[in-house]
Length: 150
Image (cartoon, rainbow, N blue to C red):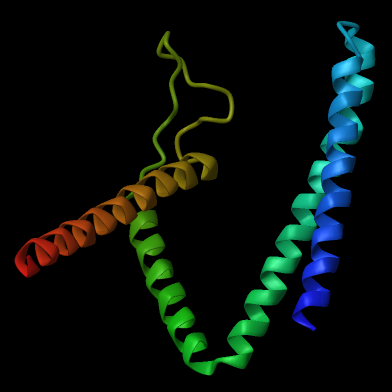
């Protein structure tokens, strides 16, 4: 069964690769004409989008099936998501929603003080900083452990 699945997967990857190469060649052959390039890029972008959507669906479905088959991993996953949610909440509460200014000191359109986009952008930055600090902390701990062992 595994060998049969491997062959089918190999054929599927080959078909996707050939289609991608064909679409890429179509763009390369379009030349310098802006209209021709635009017409050639459209199918390549659509093909890439469909591949992305299919990949997301397959990854989510297989992840859910794996969690259902192994309840211990489900508990760990839920705990991890709760920790990430808590870190996100902390990031949201320490973020600000100040106005976004351009080089001349004027407020950019959509960047008014108190706007949700400013708040969420700041939240994302703080969330990244917190996760980076946690990762760095564990890296240092692992480094010290490896130095102590040797």
